[in-house]
Length: 321
Image 1 (cartoon, rainbow, N blue to C red):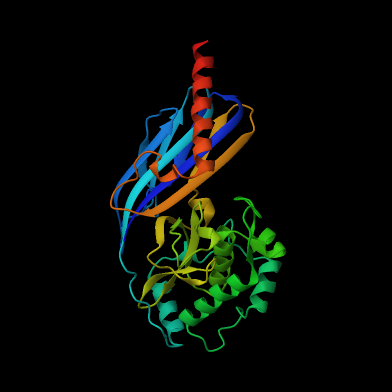
Image 2 (spheres, helix red, strand yellow):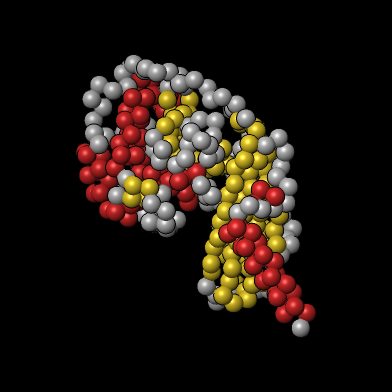
């Protein structure tokens, strides 16, 4: 399946700032069953964009805006093909734990086994582990354990938009028993690592289809978990929607947790409050989306674009004066 993806990010500042430096992780990865055929990144105000590949194989773009500006807009467009996911065995023997231990001993997976900034032990996490039966193997194979883990996390939390912030520790979600996909992923990663299973964080996009109408697939980035299984490799689990990762999951970056792979990360010089607006659309398509056509019927989106154009015009007039 071919998907066209448009990711729109806008930072509005309460006062003019005079420099912004930004890193962007929006380029879909090309590996396994996924291929990115085209990618475009636009920045307004205009800037020269550079790129590099980080230690996890993620494609990172970065730029510097030395001029004064009242807002920063970043638009990425990508065309990605997703083939069917490799089959995962329905059953796995309990001896898979021994095979997993040997696999970990042969290769270096310490970074996906050790606690990280957002996926770390806590009393609240231990309480949840007891509640969903994640403290003992109980005769379950690594695969069955992970499936129960994803189902337990999904069952224990309500998905509530804006209930946590991107920098919130998992204790906030654990106390509230609600959160967003990022929180679901961090909790499952921490529980999986406690069980000595290498787990990593995946950021990307989720296609909203007639079969998948979960609010996590509506207008935002998505996050899920990949766990290492012997004889299979890295397998994707999505605790937010409680299913294995499928053709509608599009990967942009992998890391230890969100701190490794935020879609945008940067700093600006100046004292100003920041308003952030993000919109994402994933559409089955053979080509990149034409400018704004995908959002023409979206009244909120069209109004926001009109406001952005007006603000750019005002900024231009102020700079000329």
